[in-house]
Length: 139
Ligand code: UDP
Ligand code: MG
Image 1 (cartoon, rainbow, N blue to C red):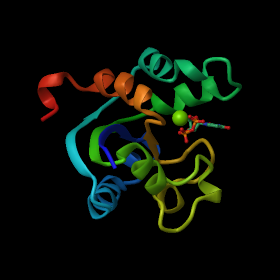
Image 2 (image 1 turned 60 degrees about the horizontal axis):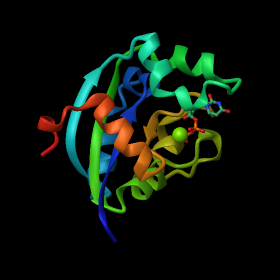
Image 3 (image 1 turned 45 degrees about the vertical axis):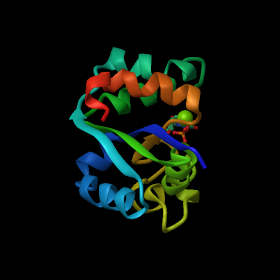
Image 4 (image 1 turned 120 degrees about the vertical axis):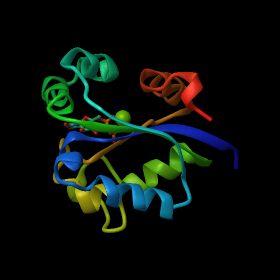
């Protein structure tokens, strides 16, 4: 399995709920290495740019409103097959269908307010990682 990197985010719902530490503990317990980490906040236009791929979807406006509603924690995670490993730990998009051992199962509340983000493919990670982190922070 190739060692890969992926972009993870703890979304405003989970940061506001005080779940940041517990989610980071799940990530480290799963063997993913935190390469870079920052709490920040997305302006509405930045959320729109990050989720541009969904701009034609009915939930886009609500999604961008949510993602710019409060602080988020962005991170780069590394490990064997990290993109799939992190998405497996996250659980499915709909938190109500997510298992109890997944981040969304524990800390998400709906299909919209689902606690975390993860890149869905190597090409996506290659765009999403530099969205938040300059090369010099990735060591
Ligand atoms: N989303 C939503 N309603 C939907 C589908 C998605 O509000 O019916 C939101 C949700 O926050 C999700 C994000 O839009 O995480 C991006 O959707 P995507 O299909 O990429 O899901 P993900 O990759 O985050 O599992
Ligand atoms: Mg996605």
